[in-house]
Length: 407
Ligand code: AMP
Image (cartoon, rainbow, N blue to C red; front, side, top):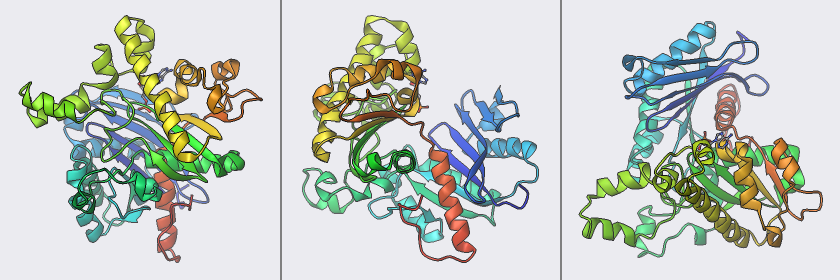
C-alpha cells in the first residue's frame, strides 16, 4: 500500500465534514471514511477503516472542531493514527456549485478558485465552506493535486428549455438558471447501472436520491435530462429541513405581511421546514416512521406525494420510463417509503415486489413489471476519488481534461 498513490476526499457541508481516504492504484479502494458533524456546536466524529478494524465513534471537544479548519486537522490526525505511512498525492473536493460552464471535475488552479469565489452568491450557505475546506487542504498538502468535483456538473447536459426560468432574459445571462444538484450521486448511479445493468442504463431512468437532502433526476443513456432541484438546492422535493418547491408568493407574504426579514425567511426555508416543519418533531425519517402521530404521518404523506408527482413529471420529460432507482439514506433503507412511492404506479409500468423490497434486494420490481425498480447504495466519495485518480494519471503523462463519461 505504501507505494500506491493515495487520495483524500473532502465533502464540507454547512456544519459537517465528510472525509475519505482511498488508495488509487488500479481502481480506487476505500481505506477509510468518516464524518465530523455539528461543527462549532457539539461536534461528533464517526469513522470506519475497512474490514478487521474497529469503527470509531466519539464526541469531540469544542476545540477539536471549532470550525472547518480545526475539523480538518482532527480528521487528518485520526487518519494519520491509522495510516501513518499514507501521504495524499491528491485531494478531491466536493464543491456544490460549478456554475454554467464546469461540466466535469477541474484541477484547482488560482483561476478556477477565482471563478468558484465568484459563484459563491449562488450557493451562499455551502460554497464558502467548500472554499474554506479547499484553502485548508492546500495549506495542509501544498504538494498534492487539488481537484474540484461539482454537484452541478452532471446536469449540464440538460436541454436549454429545462435550464431557463420564465424571467426577463437578462437574468439567464447573469446566471439565474436551473442548475440541478446531487450530481456526484447521480454520476455514481449512472456508472453502477452501466456496470450491472447496461440495457437499463441506456434507457429512460429516474433516480430518486432520498436523504436528508432529496432530489430526483431523469436520465437517458446515463445523461441528465431533467432534475427537481433548480437554482438552489431548495427546490423540488421536501427535505429533512428544506421546503422543496414553494410558490414564491409565500415569500412576498412573509416579508410584507408577517414582517419577516429575508434572512429569517431563508433560515426558515432551509433549516426549519420540510419534514421537520410539517411534523413539528424531527427531520429524521426513522423518527417519523416510529412516531406514528398524525403530524408525523402527514409529513411522510407529503414527502411521498411530492415524489410521486415528480415521478410523473420526469417520466413525461423522458418520454416514458424504463427504471426507477432509489438511493440516499431513505431510498436505500426505508422499505415503507419505497412501497408507498410505488403503490398504484402500475399505470407508469412500475410494479413493486413486496418481498424483494422487504428483503432489501437490488432489484425490487416483480418479474412482470414493465419498468424495473432498483435500490443502489450511492457513493459520492468514490466519484471524487476516481476524479482525483484521473488527474494524478494525467500528471503522470496523460493529457486533456477528463469528461463526465470517464468513470
Ligand atoms: P442521508 O442524508 O443520505 O445520510 O440520509 C439521511 C436520512 O436517511 C435520514 O432522514 C434518516 O432518517 C434516513 N434513514 C436512514 N436509515 C433509515 C431507515 N432504516 N429507515 C428510514 N429512514 C432511514
